[in-house]
Image: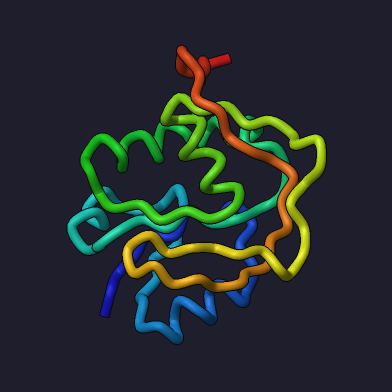
Length: 135
């Protein structure tokens, strides 16, 4: 069983069900967690959620801590945007978002093509300086 610490930013119940179905044991992060939980986990999962990632600056220090001690991190949606910001990327709104069920994706490892659905309006771009967390 893989043990993960979930940083829940507004995770839908279907994500919990999918993780449990795939043999993950979930510790949900809260302010009462003991530091010893780090010894029990195999990784950190940062969930999806609503709103602007810059509204979650209080979580930035926690996520930076896990990045610093090199615990594997998986993130989706809002969690991915936060990880990107902490790695000196900035997000911006696309002129035309990527929407639909017919987007071809090539796996460069095995050269297989799959068709995926996409529904997003933002992209990431490398920037020169880190964002100020304490404002």
